[in-house]
Image 1 (cartoon, rainbow, N blue to C red):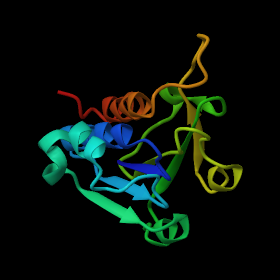
Image 2: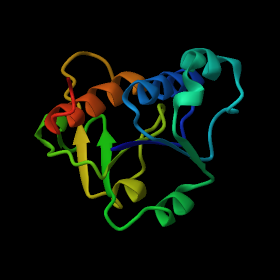
Image 3: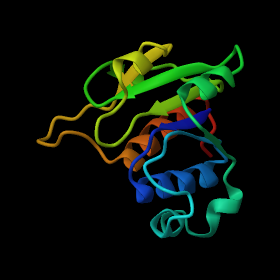
Image 4: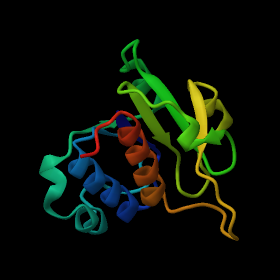
Amino acid sequence: MQIVLYQPRIPPNTGSIARLCAATETPLNLVGPLGFSLDEKHLKRAGLDYWPHVSIKVWDNWEDFSAGLDSEARLVMTSARQGACYSEHCFQKNDYLVFGPETWGLSDNIMSQGHCLIRIPIWGKVRSLNLANAASIVLYEGYRQMGMLK
């Protein structure tokens, strides 16, 4: 599996997700335009000294990212309010877990290019979960389903 952050806006979220990727040896794709510089202090602090252990690719835009995918890739789109519950999705090793910008999520155009759409149920009085928390929940469920947790 791989994590895809489409136009991320908040450096500490991206840094935390990079740390998650280092911990699980999961490739990270950042699809621009990014809302920050990759050398930003908060980004580096959130990722701590794990950046050398992250397999990261930075793409200029969605079109370049899409063109770089192999034919086996499955785009699993995420949403705060639409789609099946993440635990009902049957994860596969060729899944790319796509998360949108923190402030507005994935556009309908981007979501329509996915193979499926999933969400994490929210029943409290918040609009959405923190992006890094959401990525962790979905990624670990995928690895759990594939029997990769030890």
